[in-house]
Length: 135
Image (cartoon, rainbow, N blue to C red; front, top):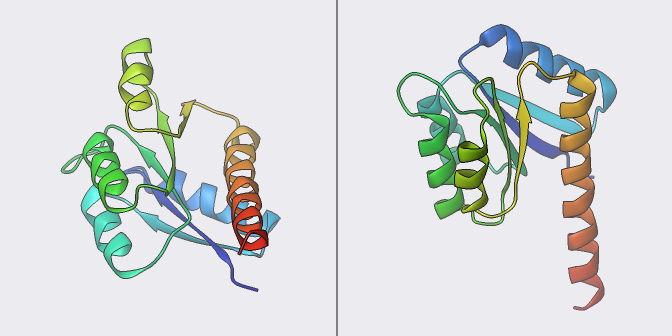
């Protein structure tokens, strides 16, 4: 069985580490990679397949918005979860233009983020199963 792959992107290393540790401890079927900048995330995305990208919006260098644009252009079906401490209706409206994107405000409960990730992975599996059943 192939592991689901999740990329966590945030310039706060403690946060990416704690999210990856929590996901790994709760589900050994998930391969979690971390990037602490948009540039590092783009390098990983260019060389490895991922099912989900979880990204902050405000980061030095390539912002989460720029990363999101690139991800949606190169991998239009990839699910993205945005996490930000600077949420607003304007940001939610901007994100809605890029399709299916989940949004969570910092500080968040780790269970809420975990549930978003697991729900997204289940949705992808269900979509895959539906597609396979029609082949």
